[in-house]
Image (cartoon, rainbow, N blue to C red):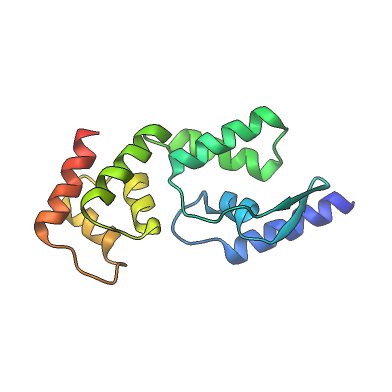
Length: 150
């Protein structure tokens, strides 16, 4: 009974605070957005809070799965990540480094570029439209080149 109550509270908090940018965001909410929470009686503390690509989230969840049994929500998140992740975590990190090498984008936008892997300039413009500055045509083309070669 107690565990069901905790689980339902975490679900409510996850829905209320989950970022709208990606379906796997509930995973981030459960592990990163709360000072302390109880999952299956284990106390957890936030060590770091940063936007990550789906590939990095998949890698983290897979490591966690090896260490302990995942909750129902965590299993669903991992299943989603396995189905919809297009690249490996190493490739995602490499792409992020290359893009940050010539233009500094917010971590949220960078994660979304890596998650979506836009194929044309219009798709890329939609993703970067939330930035506080406008990217030039050559900067957008450079990002597309980096995505295509990886």
